Length: 379
Image (cartoon, rainbow, N blue to C red):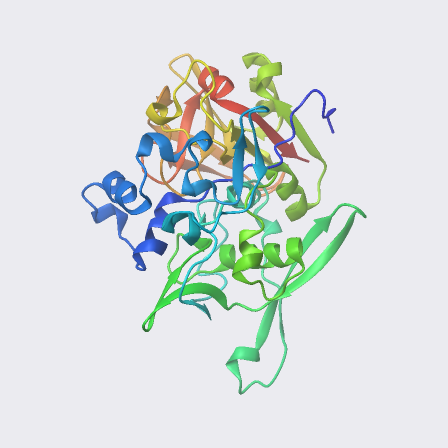
C-alpha cells in the first residue's frame, strides 16, 4: 500500500442519492423519467438549490453525518443537530419504517448497473459493490440455508455474506434475512437504502444490510446502524468485499500519462479486470465547477475502463445513483469492451452507450485528473 503521507486516504467519502432522499421525503416512489423537471422537484423537496446541494461546504442534507472542515479541506464525522431541516433528519431518521421482503435475491444475473444507492451517504460501498460486480462478478453470490419451521416463511432461510476484516486479516461470515428496512405508507413499501435497478431483485439491498451488520455489529441492522456508516473508504470497501490488496493513487501527484498507464495496467481490452473506484474532492477544485460539469463532490464512482476516440483519452466511470452523469468534456457514443469475468477467462465484446442516462459516462483524461482527488484498485 502506498505511503499515507504521499496519498491522501479517502476516509470519509460519502453523499446520499438526492433522488432517493426526495422519494423518502415525499413518501412515494417517483418515476423520474416522467417528471418534467426533476431538478426543480429535488430542489423544492430538499430545500436547497442544485448549485449548493452537491458541494460539501454548504451543509447540504445529502452529507448528513459528515461535515466539511475548512481548515483541512476534508470531511469529518458529525452528529446531525436536532434543529436540522426535515431533509437532514430524513437522511438518518426515516419515519414509518418496517422490515419487508420486497423480492428475490437475483432476478437474472449479477450486473454492474444493478446496485443503485439510496438515501444514505454510503456511495463508497455501492460504488465498490458495482466495481466488484463488473470486474469479478463471480464474487457476488447467494449462499443460503434453511433456518426454521418450513411452514413459517419468515424463518425459512437466510443469506450468508462474507467480508474480509483487517485486522486480523480473516473472513467474517454475516447472516442476514431478506427483510429490508423500507418506508411503509399504508400497504405500500418504498426503498430507503440501496436497491437494484431490476424490479423485484434485492441482492444490492441484502449486501448493504450485511455490510451494515459487519461494520456495526448490529444484526438485524437498525436505522441508527445504517446511519452510522455514512462516509467511508471506497478502496477499503472493495477489499472487504473481495479480500485483495488495496492500492491508492492521488491524482495531484501523478501526470495524466501515469494515471492512464495505471488504468490500462489493470484492464484488458478497454475493461477493468481488477475492481477500481475513484473519488472527488469535497468541493470544486481550482479550474473546474462541479455544478456545471455535473460532477458530485465527496462522491465515489466505479471506474470501469477506458476509451480512445478522436485522438482523446477517456476514463469510463459510473455514478452509483444510476443517473447524473458528467457533461463536461465527455464522449457520448458506444464504448465496446471485452467483458471477461476474471483475467484469462472467457468473454465477449460488450457494448455500452455512454450517452444514455444510466450513470455511466466517459470523461476526458485531463478532466478526470483535475476533477477527481484520486482512484484505487484491489488486486
